[in-house]
Amino acid sequence: MAGHGADRRDHSRRSRHQHRRCRRGAIYTLRLEGLDGIGDQGLLEQFDQLSTLQANSDDPANAAQIDRRAREDSQALTELLRAYGFYDAEVTSRAEAAAGSNAVQVTLEAQPGEQYRFAEVRLPGVEGAGEQEAALRRAFGVDPNEPVNAVAVTAGEAALRAELGRLGYAFADVGTLDVAVDHATRTATLVLPVQPNGTREFGRFIVEGRELFSENHLETVSRLDAGETLSTPMIDDLRRALIATGLVSTVNIRPVARAGTRVVDLAVALEPAPTRTIAGEAGYGTGEGVRLELSWEHRNLIRPEGAVRFRGVAGTEEQLVAATLRRNNFRKRDQVLTAQIAASHIDRDAYDARTFLLGAGIERQTNIIWQKRWTWSVGADLIATDERDVNIESGMSRRRTFFIAALPGTLSYDGSDDLLDPTRGFRLSGRFSPEASLQSGAFGYSRAQIDGSFYQPVAGNVVVAGRVRLGTIFGVDRDRIAPSRRFYAGGGGSVRGYGFQRLGPRDPVFDDPIGGRSLTEFALEARVRIGNFGIVPFIDAGNIYTSPLPKIDDLRFGAGLGVRYHTRFGPIRVDVGTPLNRRSGDPRISVYVSLGQAF
Image 1 (tube, rainbow, N blue to C red):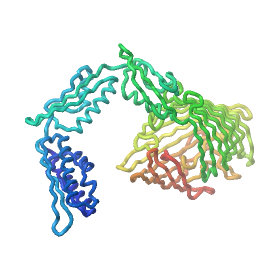
Image 2 (tube, rainbow, N blue to C red; image 1 turned 90 degrees about the horizontal axis):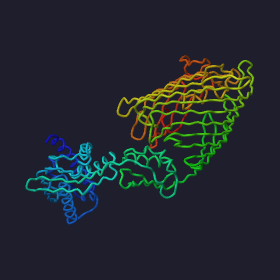
Image 3 (cartoon, helix red, strand yellow; image 1 turned 60 degrees about the vertical axis):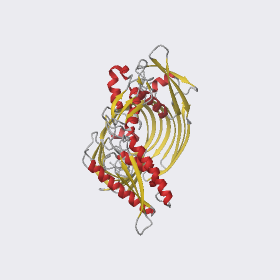
Image 4 (tube, one colour; image 1 turned 120 degrees about the vertical axis):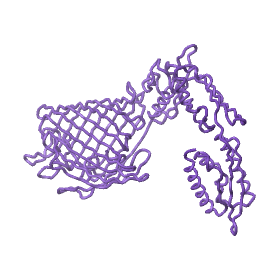
């Protein structure tokens, strides 16, 4: 049989490995003989797990104990060989003391005999599936003339049940498996009765027990429509979606047939999860100072799935009090309604702003469980903000009050393979926000921004990633725009190596950033992964411009090295950057810490 030479070499390496491992116990060594022609690595791996000799190789043992362990292993190996179709297999054991040593050589010698094959494989009743009979037979995957293999048969039975559910046979009956062995012909006959009992269509939801969600909301969360063929994957999807709400601890979904029809209702019983959360956060940033945050959230205060969150921030550069409503699965699966009210004071080098905001919006969200290709959002904001900046012409500090109405919208495409740690594909997003402002008269302008990134593996553990960001504000001069609505650049999510918002033009008096009407940013990095850790050399570039169109001249470059620790939730990121063409006031070194890749 092809591949026997490779299997023999693998077995030889395995024997040497076992020999070394057992000699460390200074008790006995184990050798398997007669398995060179088996060619199934799964059998040897299973024997490793079952072997009494292997499990106790480091324990002192006398001759009687070694003999007992060898007999147990002989029986285990015999049963394994039978499971793989070697029904005439015989295994003998012998133990020999090495000359001049207390070490014992234990040998299990197998005589597998001829491997039995299936003479006939029958699935009586499967023809009731009509055109889908062939798909069910393919799912079972065991055919005549194949070797008798218990592992393959068990896997085939599980795959058959799964395929019946996928095709909509909600009440299919898979009978008892029967394998009849004929030792005279060294063959076997497999019989597995299958009664599909017809496909079923979905009717409606029935709420059982405590009503956490109504029948209408269950219809919103599910992807099932009345009259649709009911399949197991759709039920599993509903179960995962209910758990993903964060409001459910356990889900029980039970099919209920309607007598005399093909219609099946789904009875859903839900056990609620805790709905209240108190969270705190403390931190320090080079460009943002000390920051303390405290929040309280009730994730189902306004049913269904209406989360209300109150949040307060106290910091050296930011103070905020805010309330937010977030209604998940609003009228449609993964559609989110948001509303917020906030009063804040932000004191940056670029501006000092005391702001009151009312906002609302609706969006199609993505998440780690169901990463969406297309997402979007539309909203409306009403903003009253009193802001301090510097008048460039006079060099004097000033305060102005702005009343702003904005209609922000976004559209994004995600063609990457992972939300937090992409290794392949690309992303593209656009943001557009027409805004009307009232300050010494009424005027209007529009903000637009485009972000793109790509991810390309270039070796087994190296991914090259790149990013570009372009932004523009058109329709009005920079000085008329509220300082908090202008573009800024610099920092961990922008051009690393520079301080937060420190790129771009500065005022001539205090040397503080004043923002601009256009933005250009580039980034390139190599993500080298070594186990759970990663090393990421990077180079970033960008700047802020007073013109309405982004440029690529006078770019500021930053470079550095990052470290990643990869967890099941995504990588923890630590980046250390330095400006390559620094100006007065720019730090020599900047450190950034966050969850997820930089882009």
